[in-house]
Length: 125
Image 1 (cartoon, helix red, strand yellow):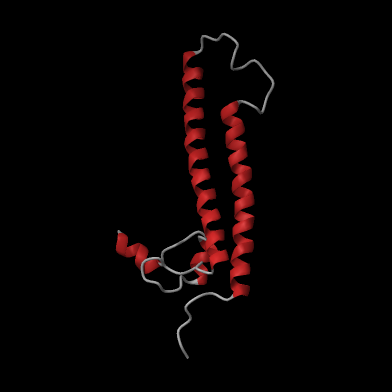
Image 2 (tube, one colour):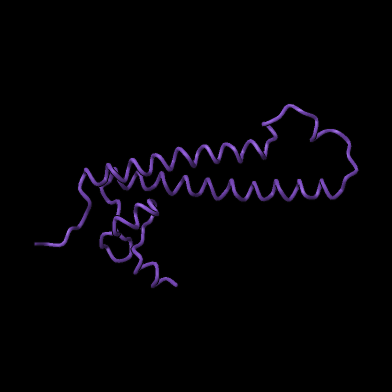
């Protein structure tokens, strides 16, 4: 019996469902972070009222910077998931880009946007 070189269409559909669910959650999280950055979650005057509480303003600025970093990471995650969907459509999903072997299903279920097998990932370190 020859070694399997790609996942079957039914297996690819299973991974597609996982990715679509993660993509939906990622978009929801991104929208929440974006709302935090834009203060669109409230209709108050907290960003325009004069205040002399320097520490609070500093903390709010740090919080916005952190939310900005988190939003950037979330967008990168969304892009990786979208790229995984393209690989599913091309039927190249689950193939390690370094070794050309199939990435184990367990790894893809945990990290559905993975493009490297564990061995290839460890060789990079």
